[in-house]
Figure 1 (cartoon, rainbow, N blue to C red):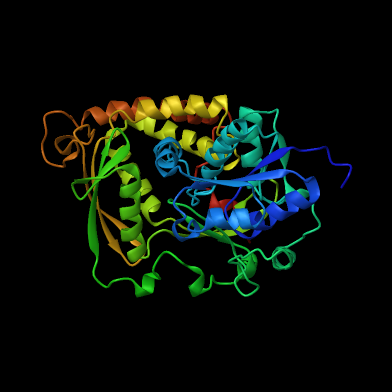
Figure 2: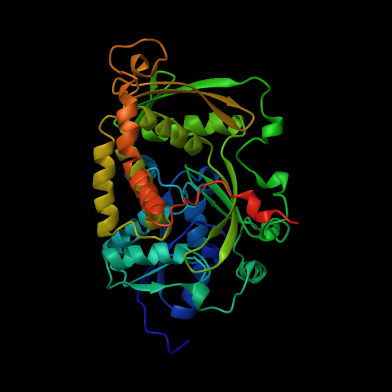
Length: 421
């Protein structure tokens, strides 16, 4: 270890989980440096009590625990939702957009503490290492980045558990329950253990948040969500701040078994991995926001925004939050949100989110335009000319084919050619 460049002080992104818990003594043993831990409160709930004491008992000189829930929702979650960003059709990016916020604050604490390095507990096989390190590179490339999983001889959860036992570090994970978990106000993720075989059904006791849909209430429950310029502000007519609003929707969604996703996703590093996510309130918000956009966005903007959502999701998933492109896409997204004001009503029932109504003062839907009854704004005879012009390229192409060989590829075959004597 003498070949390692000297480090004076390192700020560690600390969750108190298995990996980051053993990193504290490992850094001290291998880099002989001071370790300052930082934990962002993003809604981990029962994971936070006693965290500071645990970090110091493990060898840290100090531990910051900061409540960043409001910033998390306002500056990261809601803009991603407004973009309609969903990774590979299902993943609502709960871990992905948490990492740049954590890393940003870690860089700021490093400046406050006079630290010359930062460290994280992401593995060399995952996406989080990229998300943490791209943020550090974008905000302070002079900081050294230490990634123990790429250096030490610990090769799996069992090795990590043995290391924790050796240094008397209390951890939640066991060999019987060995999932890699990430929890915040937006979601709870599970990877590893029996999930590594995609044929295995997720164990029922793995889900710590949402009710099994088969056990959910037999009576549906209605909920109304009000948005102003794309930002959710009220539930059932009652004003809520970002944190309180998401917490309430989480309770409702979890109660009715909403928001479970089982996905085999393509990691940025090139391999596929299986993740099981619980995103109860977030799933409701995404669907509500989408329902309002259907009312309020014109066709061309809505269709183009679907393309933007795909790219935005890739940027978030790949850790490219602090990039010029993400910032530029945000400008487009925020322009499209100016008229996304209104209310959406859902019926929640046994894992389902059933749209039960939507309204907006900026709705482009007009019943008097689409009615089958007589109206004064649409002459059905006009459709004939529209269809002729819209189909003109097809007609020209077909005419050229007929003027050439004289046969259209869509003509019926002459079955006389197939008759046998």
